[in-house]
Length: 362
Image (cartoon, rainbow, N blue to C red; front, side):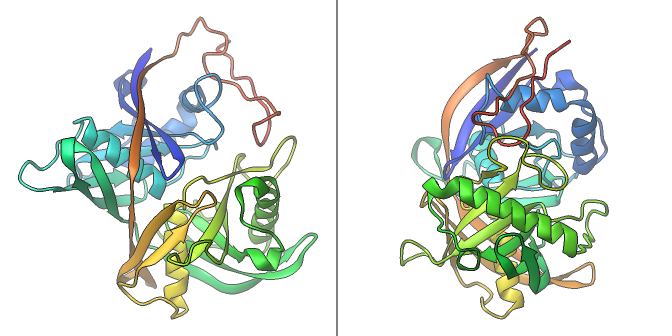
């Protein structure tokens, strides 16, 4: 099998966009959520083939360009990451995805304006994005109206082993996040401190899973703390906040069989930032339309704002807008040869968080 891909990074988060060849896989489902579940249950070998060694790296995600199920959409998207459970939505991924499909012509740009609007059918629902197109067709930046985002718990106490009691906010921005201050955990948000941030984030997630019950009105059965945002003051005065977002590498409760326990998001994290501004709005600390600049662990920035307040399944929520940039870094054909004993990828515990695996074709 061969698949045509475009590799893009958004503020350091690497994404592999599969633009052709997916018809070979027979992906089924009448909604993007059903397609996501079908891929999880039947095509996990494809995820590992794309993302693990020898083709991938520890931070890589994949974005699948699929026919939309929603008649209002221009294109469909399913996101794959290092966990076997695919996320409903990802800000960094959709910024990279839009950059790839517009610059490559998979979705045509508006010939009469420097702004192109694209409606994307995702497992989390319909997402509308606008792209500013610059000279030679380069996507200068993308603004995404994200899915409804909301806080479920504010200032909830969590018992963290080795630390004590800390307060956290639990909020949804396409994934559920526990939001915890770095100062309360006694850690610094620097790139060379990633191992400590990763382990502490998994301690926080374990405490949240144990003590917080979450109701996800949009997708029953997908109700758990997916990730942890550890945040603090920005490094640069023009920004509002700095974060280290900890993404677990294995499903279920945290486990550290070898290596690092989790992955640190390279970008400022779009869904995490959406969750953050939802919590800030719920606390009355951020005005509608006020710019919020989120800084990543490698000093990259996403700009977010509360575009509007809504009611979502009977609860107060917001529509966040997220702005960022993607950069194409490679175009390639991925070959999956079933005679290759390592065709479906592998991991080794010297660099991969979680449990080392060899996904052979036998």
